[in-house]
Image 1 (cartoon, rainbow, N blue to C red):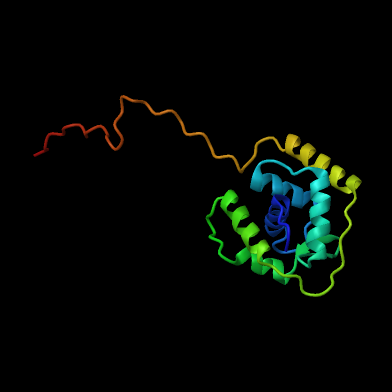
Image 2 (image 1 turned 90 degrees about the vertical axis):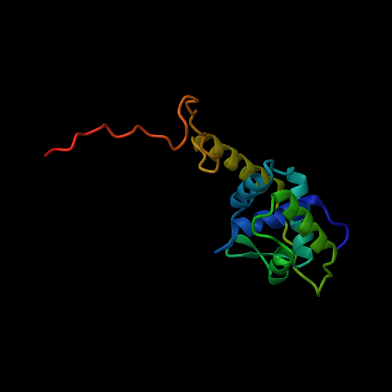
Length: 162
């Protein structure tokens, strides 16, 4: 596949996160992209990426949602470590996309700018209303420097009763 864009790898990673058990809606894909990268890609780039990846047969539309094809799932699993950082996963996906060759004709998915902007707005609203995010690590309590870890008070001395 030539040329390979960063947005293509981000979109594949987001779809693999969002569409595990069922086809993912556009809002779920955008939320997964935000989670994976920390930033939502530009709307125009997302539209182009949807078109490009679907024309190459890596994304398909099912039951009102979007999912990865078998070829895309193979690209996602080749050379991937489960605990790899998102930047390394994106780089690995880009390498695998560069080696991918088109097999046959595929139907291109046309996502409109209105659909993407509505999904981004819905995600931003849900992010504001969510309150506390469970994905953020809990802050550690401040430790008292006077106490040594593992130390405890000794038991009081008891005289043996006779």
